[in-house]
Image (cartoon, rainbow, N blue to C red; front, side, top):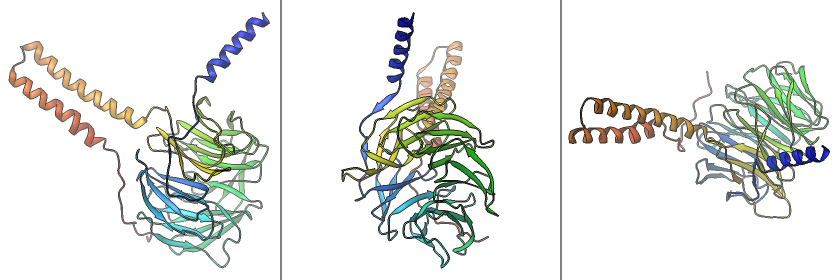
Length: 396
């Protein structure tokens, strides 16, 4: 009996091991950087990827399959860049650095704001985000200080004190609260007005390196030094799933734009993609010999990008890995196409029931088919290309 149980368990383990796609090499290594990377940001609206790190520069790439380098911002900071983030509207980018400065760039990636004050940051800035309106920036540093900046005046509005070093911050649709992770083994939900901790997400047993809120505002994803990543109910703070990351430190996390999948990255370079609703492991990228500093899904999530801090190598650049995830945009396009083609086929069938098709019918339906396949589908579902917009004024 024990032998039978052992065989069954072995079979299940064997099947599960081969159920997920396993990758050992990146599909692309994007050119343009000459040192390690710390941060990535993706603009869903404009389909562009930003990357930055130890060469003090920011690179902007097209998010299409060619991943063309479209702009470099050289010497964006005077020290390594630790954090990047696009605003919710996708037309502003913010960066934070070890030079104690926060910079803001417009949709042409020209520096428009330098957020620095006499009583501003005096230690390395590790985290930065916009509020939902895009008019306020939050930045957190090694000293545990969170500074709230006004983009309109470029002045400090308020300062919050976390006490310990801050590794990551996030904001939900509720503008009153800020989610803060750092050297403590829990996430604090802080009132942005008075700095009071409203509640905590308790479960980790070591420092938390990364956190992200799902776009559908249902989940919080965290990665920690305790060898785990966890998915939480954003509203209740209840731990929903503990992900079996199988690594020493989880250093990066990300959600897909539709909140269906999430990814975890580790300090050994391993990357895993999970189904959020079930916690099921979907794909796995084996250890890559670098520290995964950041992760982002692309718009169509057929690929995922990683920011590496290399170990014993100088092959710098963003790593792009393919996935076998079903492209949600293609699926919707195919459904629209099938609907239109079915409508076309039904119209032919209705005519055939009445009489035999003539030469004129053939010409008529050939033209209709051409309009359906090309005009109706391609125009309606045209993929966004890189576009340049003038940044709107922040004044009321």
